[in-house]
Amino acid sequence: TVPSTLQAELRDYQVEGFHWLSRLAHWQAGACLADDMGLGKTVQAITAMLEQAPHGPCLVIAPTSVCHNWERELERFAPTLTVQRLGATAGREEQIAALKAMDVLVTSYGLLHQAADPLAAIDWQMVVFDEAQAVKNAETRRAQAAQRLRAQFRLALSGTPIENYLDELWSLFAVINPGLLGSRESFTRRFATPIERNRSDGALHALRALIRPFILRRTKSAVLAELPPRTEVTLEIDLPDDERAFYEAVRRRAREAQAPLRDGGAGGQTPIHILAEITRLRRASSHPR
Image (tube, rainbow, N blue to C red):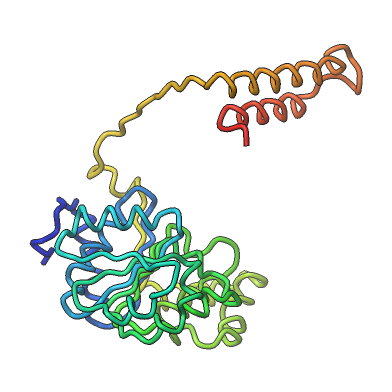
């Protein structure tokens, strides 16, 4: 059942997602929650964490830019958990060693390989890899550090488990379900090469059947009836005087650059030149840097 300490009202598809995560955690199998962006992967992961945390410490690994968001969301939705941020300075080993049940440690992929040894020394109850495409390259130190982690339940959150090549899928599953897809060489021989080069339907169906129990993906269109109406807010922001002056200088340079083209020079004015100048103006309006 959904933990009573969760401070959120889950939608039906989010409850189904939690049930799926809970079942895989019970099996000690890894999971990849690949819902569309905006469908609440974070709150589903936090719900599962509330269920797992009484049995041991949990770890959240995320890009640096969203670590603070994880801290805020955990404090908001799961106030019974004790949230810590892994320090970037001395004392990390002591901080990690002192973790206990109901503790959640939040860290970045950048610190993951820097603190690989102490993190790998802990028996984690649950590890969450947010934006798990960060470990899609098995050659990187962060992917190798992720594979070393010991955990009863590993959860990858990613709307794009595969971005370019099937080898990325192997790297992801080497982290969340080690051994399921075999060695990298056998995976390339059995699946990647036949599917990517030979368009083998048989290999594709076999791979889908193998990974289907461990990947859950819902699109916005599939759960549209449960989503609230979209709210659009338009914020008009006036540029400070110095940025307005900078923008005006860029605009005048753009006009001057277009003058020869308007007069028929250089083969005449072309849309690509206009778009290039508009792009510069958009960037200047965002920030001078």
